[in-house]
Length: 93
Image 1 (cartoon, helix red, strand yellow):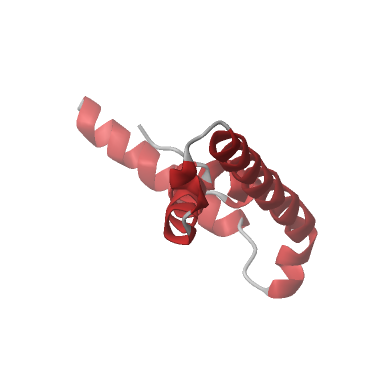
Image 2 (cartoon, one colour):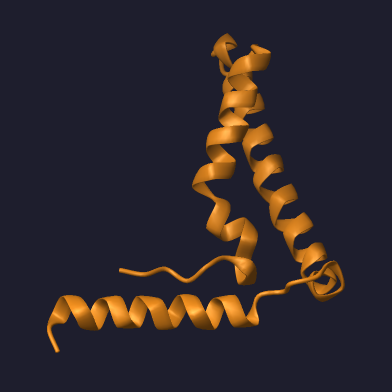
C-alpha cells in the first residue's frame, strides 16, 4: 500500500472514531458545556485584557467597536481547537 493511500485510510479511521464518540444529543453534550464555557471565557477575557492594555498604552485604534469585534472573531477562529477541547475533530496531517 502506498504512503498516500495509507494516510487516507488513517484519516478516514480517525474521523470515523471521532464521529462515533462525539455527543449526538444535548443530553450527551451537557458534561462538556462547563468546559466550553470556561475556555471561551478565558479566551475572551484574555483578548479583552490585551485590548485594554494596548488602548491604555496609546493605541486608540482598539477603542473602535468594529476593531474589537474583529479581534474577538479572529481570536475565536485561531483558538477554536483550544475552546472546543475534547469535542474538536482530530488533527489529520
